[in-house]
Length: 216
Image: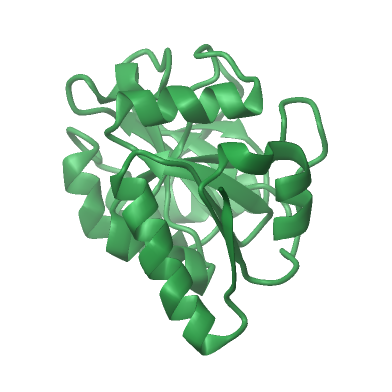
């Protein structure tokens, strides 16, 4: 049976983070707030858990799950190389609305879906999400909704769509529903903007010096 924790209450917040971290380690799904919308996530290195995540959303492996982390240091377990442009972008925009695509460590891309040897990683700004990520480790996280349905702004909206497929719901109040993160691919020779979101191309270009636009 799903458990829901009101994380606006400090005591329930601590209990909720502990329960959610235990659920992640057990291969179960957790709903958590982020700095845009609510997400549903699981341990990033657990193939069965990622399969359960995609199944709960009604999503195929052709749309691999991105990974959220609680600190830049967690990248060491996920990527083979941040390249010449990654450190400056991380320093300037993490935590925040920038997703970076890197070459993945061997085997990880297959766990997350058909990711062609890469992994998309972001460090969110939401403090509740960061607390959980630092306790549970990197998590594969997608928006907490059924594929094709509106994104959930509250834990209640997430439950209405995902129900008992999720073990723990962390209720941090309404999500801000800001712009989606910008996505920059660093797996090639030059940074490429895959999705224009909260950060404009010129803002990113001022930090990394060069930026192609479009899928290429």
